[in-house]
Length: 131
Image (cartoon, rainbow, N blue to C red; front, side):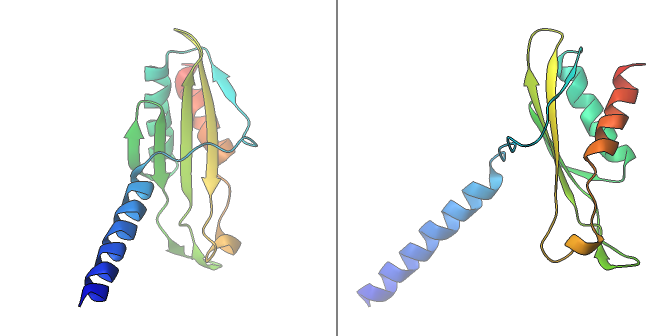
């Protein structure tokens, strides 16, 4: 009886840790280059959200220094295309200067039909921020 209760407690603790880990903001990879915009972080964050929407992503997370979007899966030339997740990290470098890192994460199952959206997202952000 006690072993069963102990096992249940371990399962609850592990599940809680997993859920807490999934809810936190992921860290940007060091290999991802930083692009600097001469705009305040609030404007750059809005441009990041707009860029995700324009390129067909659903915004899943929107924080002051992090925005995340997921592109819905499609059945195309390669089964399982789509499904990419894009993370956009923002770093204030002064009142009118913001560093941006964009990184496309691909799933193991659909990697053959997925593409990197980093350049397209930065292009859309640049269009918005240079108007």
